[in-house]
Length: 350
Image (cartoon, rainbow, N blue to C red; front, top):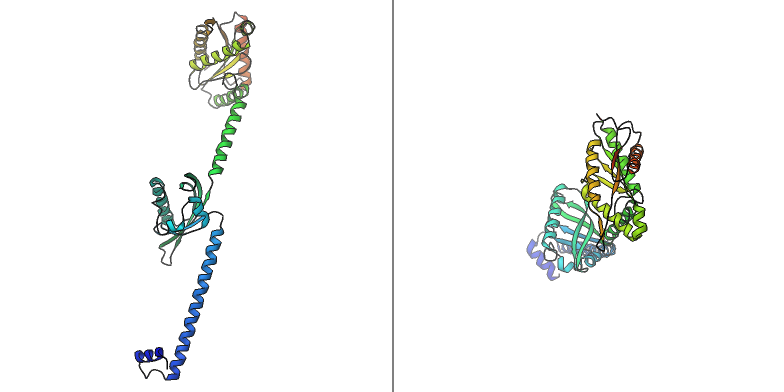
């Protein structure tokens, strides 16, 4: 009888089994041990396969325990962060990520465990590999043990930094195109199309609120063709830019001025009746007349004619108000220029 059998018999007593029973018992124990070892080998093989599969996932995949310590990480995650699993295993990563980011990571993990819900969000993380902050689209899902206590946090992070940069460039390009479509390139003021759109918005607003008035000014630089013929078109352009800046400096923040033609401009005065509009128009006319453009020490005198119309319910649309202000403008020019005229017939304001 083997030494193992003798030892077991000594420990359990001679009378429990006969020798044959002992041998049968040991064979069964051996069989169980062999089955257990085979199952362990199978589990180890399955684990290797599972880890290999995880490494093939083309995004950063990692698992944290209930204290936010790294429990598992795939190769893509190592490459994305520039850190190995060996460095991060069993740590929260506090030695590798900036303190402000770590504070956010840990707070987010706690909130996810507490909410017991999967979440998806954008976050910023430091990449040693890139030596820069990156933007990640992150998904996290909590796992709990049979007692309902936090166990693991399964996480996936997709680096979307390049996508975000491309989106920002596209947005900038769209803003530039929008500006080109709505802005007069010479003066930087809204062009005619943009002005008409804003005018329609203001007309709709005054129609909704019957107790409010808004006025429209049409402006035309007097004898502008003579300036071009005498001084050249470059000087003419400088005059338009100078005039546009004078208007900007004179108007309120809520007002809007646009270039609607060659030397024609228009202004929207929200919440302003005809009397208030006339006061603003006269101030603007005086400002232009007293501030010539100086080029090569030579002053170029400017004057402006202005027509005023006030929005009211009888107007069917904003274009009618604009036409009335335009008619008033040309009456100002016929009456001697450098003057302000109200639309006729005047609006019956309440």
